[in-house]
Length: 390
Ligand code: MN
Image (cartoon, rainbow, N blue to C red; front, side):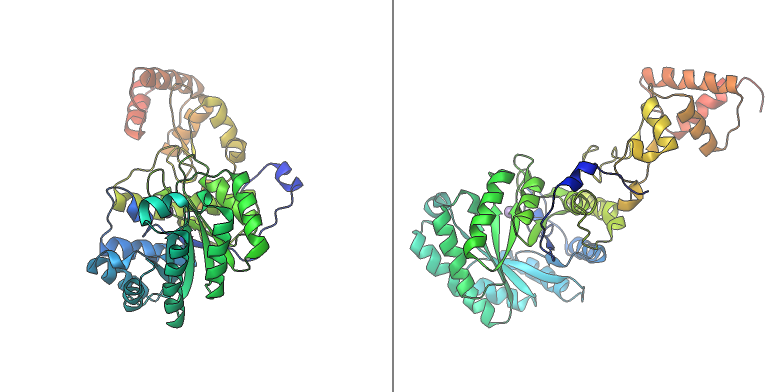
């Protein structure tokens, strides 16, 4: 058995679209994390890894930012990956030209939709915004690009205006419209309402782009998918502006294990891609980060360890191998005989029962004195507490 979930999950019918596109924006929104700038080699490495994971669409960057960024996006587009390569573009013709020069398969273009953004960022009226954004959509479509139109701050926009904006984009044959919960200001129930409202008038595919300011990015994304959206954005380790985006690993594993929606990803590469992104960003993954954190498959408590040795699923919802992690039994003040015996076996030591009891006592004492029990410390303890000569 590789996983065991709550049977109550199955009491609910989950109405997902048959095809769900996960598009990864680690290389664009993720790179907008303060202090993060990937090198060309780092971006190429991450893109190749995402492709190995079988992510179908990669947002590789924002080529208008600089000539270097343009060169990097172009290099990724010419890597011959299975994934489609898209990039961000403002609603300006020059941005679309730069995207075309970078050989991408498509673009995400965007326009502020809330009055807050229109008044205080763009200084446009609603009508101006509607007219401006569609010129570039038309131009990009004419040049054969996949075009996604994103309404920025959509979750704080007037619903009628938002519908008009998407409707207009639909009129220009956009391939997808994006709901950006730009500052993570929605609840899952609010997202459910919004997507269902939009579905009444919009026939185009809808994507969710959720931020995690309240820790609800994942729930909001899944709520959107259940309400009829068919695409969703993620970043590795959930990196991105402020509190970040929805984490790729959490979304993929929640859909696969909890919701029974397996999108065919090669999840065994998840830990590796997390490590690559952590290194490239210089941002450590928190030990308790779901799926990829160091502590997610680590057990110390004696009661837990005893049970896990007999059946791992007692204290794990799924086995670590599914995401390229490894189970670790950590010795400490909560350790019992069974955990210590397992460690002795793993290290190739044979001891009597009396010796085992002495070693357990010494392990607890050493940890309580403040020393972390790594392999060297453990071997030292065994050496010092052996009752008989080897
Ligand atoms: Mn964003």
